[in-house]
Image (cartoon, rainbow over all chains, first blue to last red; front, top):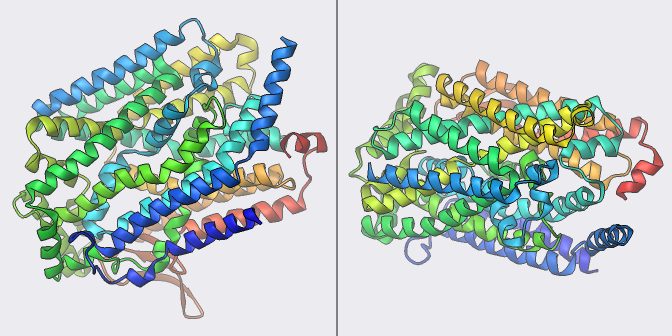
Length: 79
Length: 538
C-alpha cells in the first residue's frame, strides 16, 4: 500500500509540473517581485525534495545494500 | 585585469587539487583507483561532485541567456523538471547500477550491457554512439573557457590562449588526479558556485535599485511583460521538456559517477538534496537573466534587445543567414557576466568570474568518462589489459586524456561555436532516447541484445535525421512554424524558430517512445540471454 501511495504521489507531482493555470499571468508578484509562475515552480522544487525524502524513507532498496554487505563479509572471511 | 587574476588563482587551486589527489593515490595505479576513486567517495563529495558534473556552462550561462530571451519559463522547462526526474532516476537506477558495479566489478555502462545481454560488438556500437554524443561537450567546454577568460580580462587574454590555458588545466588535473581529483574539483566548484550565486543576486539586485521596481517596470512594458509569464511557449513544448532530464542517467559520466560511492547510503543525501541544489543555482540565474531586460545602461544588452526587436518585426522578410546572424546577436549567454561587470566591485566580479569559470570547466568528467570507456570498453575488452597489465591500462587512459584534449582544443580553435551548441541540444535528446537501454537492463528480464541494438540504431538515426532536417530547412522568423508534413490536417512535422516539432512535441518525445517500443517488440521476437545470466541481475 505504501508503495502504491508513493507511485501515486510521484505521478501527481509530475502532473502538477504542468501548471497551465498560471500560464498567462504574472500576478500576484510574490514578495513584490517574483512572478507567481516562477514562485510556483520554486515551490515545486521543494515539493520534489520532500517526495525524494519520502521515497528514501519508505521505499529504499535495502535488499541491494544487504546483498553487498553479505558479499563483502564473505570476501573478508575468505581472505 | 583584476578579475582575470582571480580566475588564474582559481585555476591554480584546481590544479593543486588534482596534483594532491595524485600524490594521495601514488603507488595504487589500479584502474579502479584511477577511474573510480576506488569506489570510496563519501556522502558529501558524492553529492556535490555528482551535482557539479551536471552543472555545465549551459546550466549557468545558457540558463540566464535562455531566460533573457524567453522569460521565467526557463526555470520550469529546464530546472524544476530536472529537480524531479534526475533524482528519481538516480534513486531507481543509480542505486541498482552501484550495487551491480560492487557485485560484478563493472566500471562502465557498456561493460554491464555486454554482460547483461551476452554481447560483444553490440556493446562496442553502443560505446561509439555514446562517445560521439559526448565529444561536443568537451569542445564546448574549451570554447567556453576561452571566451570567459577573454571577456573577464577585458580582451587582454586572447581566445586561443584562454582556451589553451583551460584545456591544459583541465587535462592536468584529470591526468594526474583521475576520478578522485575530478570529484574533489567538482565539489570545490559546486560550493564556489552555490556561495557566489547568492552573493551575485544580492549585489546585482542592490545595483539595479531593487528587483521590485524592475519587476513592476517590466510589467508596465508591453514588450517585456510576457517574459514574466509563459505565454511565449506552448504547453506541449513545455511538457516535452520533461523528457530531456531522462538523459542525465544515460550520460556515461553520470552513470560512472554512480559507481564511485563508498556506500549505497550516500545516495540518500544526493537524492533528497538534488532538487534543492538545482533550485539554489538555477533560480538566481534565471531571475537575473529575466531582470537583465530592465538594464538600460549597458550598451551590449541594449544591442541584444534591438536585435531581438528587429528579428521579431522584420525577420519574415530576411534571408535565413541574416536571421541566424540576428539570433546570434540577440543571444544572452553573456548577460550574467555583463551584469557583474556593471554592478559588482572588481574583486567580487573576479570571484564570481572564477565561479562561472568553474561551471564552464565542467567538461572534466566527460573527458575522464571517455577515457574510462575507451580503456575498459575497447582496450581491455579487446585484450589489452590481459596482454599488457593494469598499469599499462591506466597509462593508456592518461594518454587518451591528452590526445582527446588536444584534438578538442584544435577543433575549438577552428569550428564555429554554434555548431557544437546545436550538437549538445541533439545529444540531450540522444541520451534521453538511450535511457530505455538502462531501464530494460535493470528492470526487464525479457530484454535482449537485439532490442538494445535496435534502440541504439534508432537513437543514432533519429539524432542525425533531426540535425539534417534543421540544416535543410532553416529556422523561420519568430511566429508561426513552417509545416513540412501534415496528416489529415494535423501538423505532423514542423520547423519552429527554436527547432523541430513532431505533432507539436519536441523530437525527444517520439525518440524516447519509439525507443521503448523497439526495445519491447524486438526483445519479444528474439532469443533471451541464458537463465544463469538473467539470475545475476534479478
